[in-house]
Length: 371
Image (cartoon, rainbow, N blue to C red):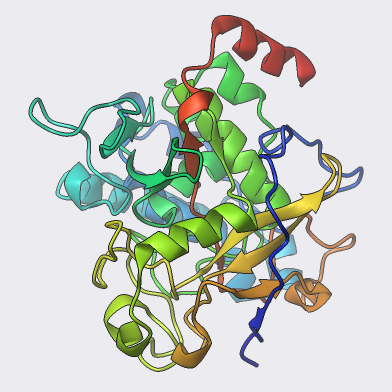
């Protein structure tokens, strides 16, 4: 059944919740019993000693979800040796081979800045590019004017699996390109199913993550870069949407929706850019935005609609609140606090603010101490 998107009443101006990037510990007993771990010989493959490329994670991510296709009861009984172990080795080698022919510029999460390229730090009125240390990924950030005369920057494209896989599977740690701060961030349990739903991986939007998962991802990016990246509030997303100026009679040119998506997500950046230079603000996947709550129990809604949304429902006011049915078919007990088994239209787009600036060493230490 297609999700129902409904207009929401303006919640009024809100300041940015100071806990947006706060680390939250998993609930006791949270497990993911059907994850398949690779054996020692997999980690000994030649690619393990070289700098990590985003593309390496694609097959590994799908491999981790392979038990979901076999059925939970079968996957629980199969050891990591034998045929599955051989599949793991094959996938690892194939991922290594693929990474030699896929350039960093084609990975869908932005490109690393060249000598003449965009600046690498927030610059008033300009696009800038944030490299993610320890990976070949980067985030292209575009400026958005604020009512008070300031600026915020928003990701040009939705977060893709290329970067999200690094977060999920700790691939930065395996490549020895992580930091103590990023290692300390609580990360989600591995999904027990192929969470990309078979839609596609390299360059496709990451999906089905809970709000807790999304907030932890923002915290991880912040510790990796030294800048504070956030999940936007609903008001901030609406401001972005208003300046994006997407014509209501040209939705098909700007968004993957039920009218043209073929009931699946598509690689980011394939539709026309809006007035801000953003892609896929409408459609493809809905984007988590904060509405309130507490650090222990944040609240949010999806904004922008997804690939299942009719074009006529896509506007700056449409939203979809969290629904318990998003995880109805999860067989685990307790159900996952990190992933949705039945919501393939949930995604992320991060923002960064002018006054967030560069995190000081003291702030980094405080973040580490809190954990």
